[in-house]
Length: 501
Image (cartoon, rainbow, N blue to C red; front, top):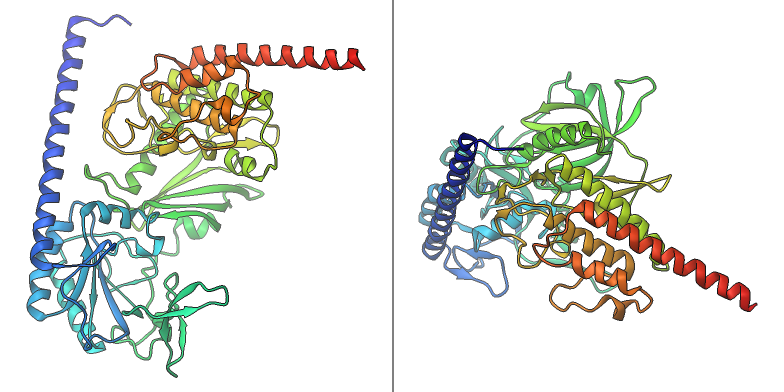
């Protein structure tokens, strides 16, 4: 394509504006982190060793061992403002409360992967001394935070619809039941004073509590209307993944006759909000556009059947591809793949990358877990939430560390084909060695698996060069040559054995 001078000037202006926005966002993030540290020093002076939490004061004997906890949810963008509203008031009352030691820890909490899905949304935790105080605090904290929105806290109840305030019955102190194998299970005391499991992954504690000061009837979550697609057309029957940004479910699609199996992908409003405001809903809405773009370009991504919105969340209905992801398949094997098998898979992956890049996209999350092996042995690519246009400057941290250039992970940079090619190299390393690549202490492939031909080792090394100039089309040709040579050597060795015998 030949760019006219006006086109080139427009591109330069666009690039400069993106750089300016990046600098402004960096300054904003720095300011928010500084403000959070200052608020912690003033209102959360107690730091416990090796804990992600800071406390308002050391718990005293007046704090009960269990009761109704209150949680205030917030995102990265609202955390400082929410805390500024409630912390001075809680301090004046002498209430015990805690919050994360840093905004980075809040991001991990809201992700749901680092500290457990049940912790999502738990920005501030307050420990009332009685049922009466719990109800009083909930009302006041709801009023103080009524202008804010936050993610839903799993297994808690919202104090009121759309409220940032949530509640549940549970342990305040570290009560545990020792299991026969020596492990400890968090516990609370029942009406007879016996220790029973503290069911953090359900709402059962709240229904078994001696008294609920919030409602006369058992609490219920907000319900969607009866005529929504989740009730009339798509029925989820199995959860595949759950985290802050949303869930992925196996479901049945009753819009066809007979009903067909499908994948239901949920993008939650305010789920895992990042600094530029993107949340789970934004990611899934955007993935729909990416999948359609790739499908038009001929990439065998899952077909988008439908999409809809419910309770502020966005749902994507995708084709169910019958197969197993490559990671799970390899973990079940007792032996490593043969070199020919590994190269054949790598050839398929290189072909997929070539198609994706030709369509103008960087995948950014190539790894064995995102490659589905169908019954006929072909590979289908999955999960394009983090994909970006080639050449874009991207702040969103995506991909998996083991499949990302070590000095590139977590940094904003212009996205090209080299990161995907690096991920292909790390994947091929895994296919050949049966091990994940260790960036910190890399070992030559031939030491891990001595029988790998030199040409294959050189190809892997070339792929694992950061900012490599290799492109998917060229990689495809290199793998094809390696595969042909290995097959020739294998055939020659077999003939030699037959001649000897």
